[in-house]
Amino acid sequence: MRPDEENIKRWRGSAPFWDKHRDIIRGMFAPITQALIEDAGIESQDSVLDVATGPGEPALSVAALAGPKGKVFGVDPIQGMVTAARNEAKRLGLKNAKFDVAFADDLPFAADTFDAVISRFGVMFFPSPVDGVREMLRVLKPGRRLAFAVWHFAERNPFHFALSRVIERYVDSPPLDPEALDAFRFAPRGKLMKVFSEAGAVARSERLLQFRIEAPVSVEDFWNLRREMSEKLNEKFEMLSEEQKPKVKLEMLSSLSEYSTGNAMSFPAEVLIVSGAKSSPA
Image 1 (tube, helix red, strand yellow):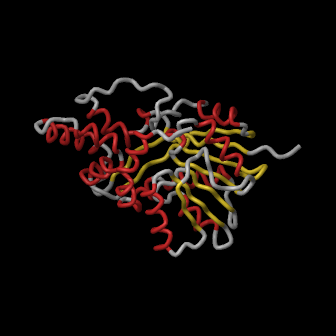
Image 2 (tube, helix red, strand yellow):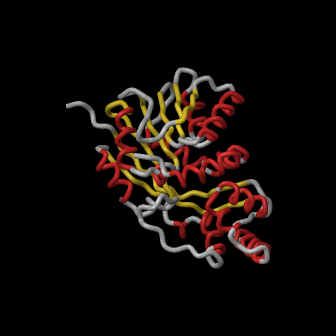
């Protein structure tokens, strides 16, 4: 498959901001990281692959668990993300974490290399999810597991809809094709499970993870963070007229204020954790 150039361009533009906000993002998504560790069966001394690692998460968190005798590799198609991940690993002194540029369907590893493969919010943006999962199974050891995290429906995740419901009143947002490369592509239960089945994964499972996204920032700081994290949201905001922008910003801040605790933000969230295993030789 060929990478989706428009999607790659968007992520390339937001890469510096994912690095800038890495500590907040790590905290916000820590429950998802823990769920991936559990469902992929990751333990100390394991060799783990993190696909679509972004600026190094959850790979860096997993590296701390794997310990000096374990190995963690993170791959991402965006060079800026990989550079940020390498710099953070160096800053943390993690010698068991390595990062490289690669696409999910063309991994630079031999077959049967890893004890676990994980991906957090990556598969939604694969042009061919079946090819990507099949390639991840190739590099996974027989009998071991891979685990993915994908967003459940937008209306169940105010982390997204608190802002999107405002901007969509001003910017035309036609319904997306069900297979569009979008954050909620695999929101329906069972849809990613079908991909796992087609790719050849066995012992498949799916569970709904309900948790809270916590961010120790003000309402306005969170608004800035979300604009910088999401190139798509920022593009829509920039489509507004100069007269509209202050009005829409105030509406967005008002929408977000519902989830403010005074000095932090707290959002109910729902994510699907889908996992499967590589079949063992007969």
